[in-house]
Length: 430
Image (cartoon, rainbow, N blue to C red; front, side):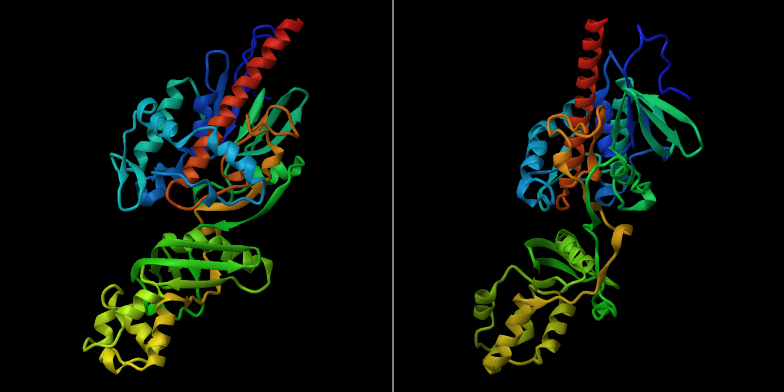
């Protein structure tokens, strides 16, 4: 059996912490666990780590949101515990950490309210975090896929896929969920934690594009606009606003991704599909009634703008309205049909893109099975959990990085404090 860090003797041994996974949460955990009285080792299945960081924000990495609304997070666990975890590291302090400690200036993008690195490249975020971890003495063992995790007396035994075995005093699991498997997420942590007795709430792809088969609106692919989108299913109702994009297979864009979990959960439940309704512009029924009031203007000219031309034409066809008709000649029935499509459009859907394109995994380890002060498992000593495998996620726009940074820091600090305290207590006993 190979130990993560050589130990000369029990009397002079240095406590060791193994961090499984070098993604956002894992890097943050390692950085905050590191210290002069312990050794921290990152075990990463890929050669470089942080691959979700690299692809986030279209390769730009939306490090943080400009503001944070806790109510926008989703969990099947205790919302109170989730809030305690989020509040352990306020947004303002997180930005200070990145700008002052990591040395990574951030800039607010006004039109989206997101904070990006000034360099506008995701790689600088990943590389800066890796550099800080190394600077703090974190050891990196890449291309190492852990497939076994067992508690042995007061320590943990880890087994790699190639047969190598390691031991550590404490373990922080940050192996992620099931989303974007191409980056290395395979659900190992979720499976092993379930085997260890943890409650894992049903997992599902979240923040994923929605599909329609057959693709009735494929001819609108590429059309994008800001909308108000509402999703409803038994026990869940959400309204969001933001970008909407027609694709060759269905729909994407921030507004769609932010309600996709409701569609996915309704599909998995096997009952009535979630109802999706779109208000295509910021104009409500009253505003459209005024805009479409009788005048010499044609109907199509009243729709374009604010609607993109191809979408305006499609809605006119669906409402059985000739766009060249003067508003003064538009019948009341035709006007009402058009307004209904403009503000309460029933968006048909049949499926979703699944984990392949999901930005996060919904569900996960129940939050009441970790100590919210340290994220130590309530079932197993010296086992800490962080990141996507915990049961909580937020909308796009940096929210899920907030969760990763917060939980990673909390687990790292928790593991370090626990080992320091227990080592001190053991010294007193001897």
